[in-house]
Amino acid sequence: MRRLWLVRHGIAVDRDDPDCPSDRERPLTSEGERRVREAAAGMRVLAVAPEVIFTSPLVRARGTAEIVAGVLGVPKREIRETAALEPDCDPANALEEIAECGARRILAAGHAPHLDLFLAAAVGSSHTLSALGKCGAACLEFDRGWHEQATLIWLLRPGALREIGKGSAGTAR
Image 1 (spheres, helix red, strand yellow):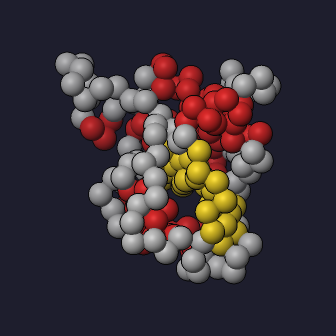
Image 2 (cartoon, one colour):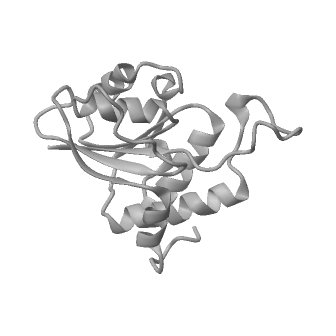
């Protein structure tokens, strides 16, 4: 059995902000960082335990991956950037990289609507099943291999993850 958790990045600097850098360089806001930590605490309660974290190279996704790794106790050396998780990429490319890495428990941090399309394709749906909010997450299970159809185990909005994580130790890391 293989597990894949999909996590959308947290709240980033608004594109309309006059001080906003290029889209690739937009960082998380301080509120975004706090909410990612709180959602990651919920993930920890739900026993999210990746061996490897793949992330889009865009700054906001990378920042999300690093915070989640810290809360879940995943060493930073296990965070791997991949262009396959960039917003306009084909979700099949991300699944190829995941399949090639050899791990059985993987978390992928990326963007909407890319992750929504990825989720739909993984479960064999021709329609999107979700619109992951910022720092929303989903858990997929692959019974035999990464190229088989997945089963959706859970799909949670960011507020639900934060609620699950309330009172859990380690949210301030």
